[in-house]
Length: 459
Image 1 (cartoon, helix red, strand yellow):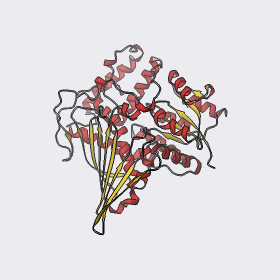
Image 2: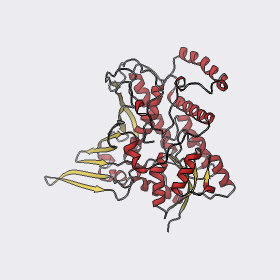
Image 3: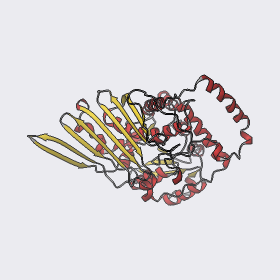
Image 4: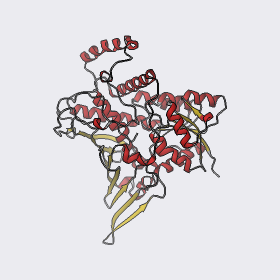
């Protein structure tokens, strides 16, 4: 009989409550929730009461959790890290105890940040990080290459229609998000996240560029790349990118890439806040066959993916349709069990995240260049930026009460924007497409910066 793993859940937000905790409860034969960590006292209390976590197994910080493990008052086999904001420091504190960790993407915001985790794994001589991309483990996805082999692959077309959070998580009855942290702590978290995003995007990026990077690329297109990679390997070459409508963040993103086999991949991701439902489809072509996959959202735990395969045999077109036996989130947790118990390598970890963030930075640079700009600050701009930054550091203690409109920030993942902030263009929309299909054509002027833009609510 498989061992029951003691799991600590770090971060009791939407993804933890809508996706992970239901699976951990259902699969009591494989997992036991041994601890819950959340910095919000209210959310820690309410989530613990809903999911049956006793008072002595609730912790405020990862440092408290690690201290309990070190003192041997808590026994763990693995950790789910699903906090909003930054992951790397908490992740390193956990893996230094030799504990495998499943991490909600994004792992980090820059190549340098993720490289710290990859380097630790290299020194440790073992993989300790698994990224939580549920659809990578969906039975329909893992069998794609059985239906159409990589050597026969002609084209992969992957499209996602992403609504706001209600169609995705409304049925999960997630406990209310809490903002009961001290002002100083919330401010420090926002500044740390902003600095990490700035490091990932470059000094020449505007706030809208950074929002597109976080809310469209790292939490949207990255998921599509992970699914494609699980079936046919990573995108080796970026061919073209476009983003539209102009001035709308995150809007719609289209990417054309090339696999190592030479086959083409087209990824299209639309953020449609008022769409009635989530939709994810893949169409895969070979010279003889056409395959279509329908993938449900991981938060819809009872929904199953489907595959239809069409081909001509003996002059007759035949279609075979199959339905996956389990949900993608449950299959992902089974893979995590095998990762912990048997050392089976995950489909995506630190090395894959490092390769992915490099490509997504290139995608962002291509979009920005098509708009006639660059992610790298001009020398004059860099010099001009030095003085304000120094002044900001000197006056940090005197600006606790700065109005929100005076601070340019990235919203923490997992928060839902107010309706009036959803996809508002910077100016009257011209529906102009920022297009890089021709290899960096001239674009219009850069959209004005706006800190109140929505984040992809899926993460």
